[in-house]
Length: 395
Image (tube, rainbow, N blue to C red; front, side):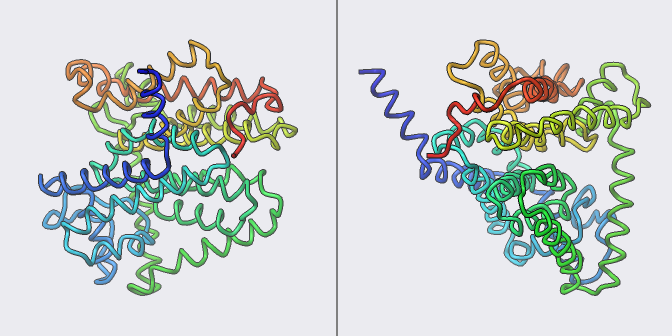
């Protein structure tokens, strides 16, 4: 009887409607809670990209009377945030979280796999999404855009894929990783032309709020702000640099260790599976590449912070569900380790002493993603995905 009840409960929580309700509930709870606490500085930064664009004020300068810290999102973000910025903050903050989680939801359910498997991915990353939404992070929506760019690529919807990539990249550079799926597209000429058109339109679109000259200057300022931010990330105490390089720098105590050798090595390793051209047609290989892309973008970025890991942990979730059944004990153990150290470590469910003295201090939140990424690369180089479809085929 107990097993039957558990099966019914599990079947219920894997329903698409339940996942949608859960995601919207988390968005509302985090939006309302953080606004009530007065903890919505990120949203203020976002909101003022719109108002500063309207008034043709600098987008990347400190504005202490309006918000703390500085903006690092592209000029086109002023268009994205506009519908929310014109609303009162109590409404705008919550609707912003809802919009982001809906993009993530549609991104997950666009994947060409069984619906129950999609729901399992959604459940796995729900807590990580909650953590990102507590900071009103666009990373939640960006993850959805990356998933959409993948799904559109493999379903030969080149225009939609190109637009998803362009929008993500021009808001936050992580979105450019959608180009990694280029070889899954059949009509590459259409994909390239669509990409050029999408980037062209989105580059000039912010000028409808201001002027072409203002937008050109803003893009120059954006590049400068990202360059300066990158040089400041490599700190032993900042909330940034939760990456492979960050682990090395913080354990060694040497902030002068450059990122460049790590990134170049990472790119070379990342590209190795592309030589297995015969594997391109298999869904298992494609999904593993998606997982690799999501993790790679985060663990090799000095700008990565805790809320950025909604991107990487989605990669871990995809890797986990693509493993053949029954899953090996070491696969399950690694997934549990990843869930605890990546998702639970920033929360009150994790011992505060361990979080502050080890996880934060040494950027250990990145460690499971690094391990899983290495395993993904190894599996992509050794597995014949013709016999590795398991639970992947769409119903």
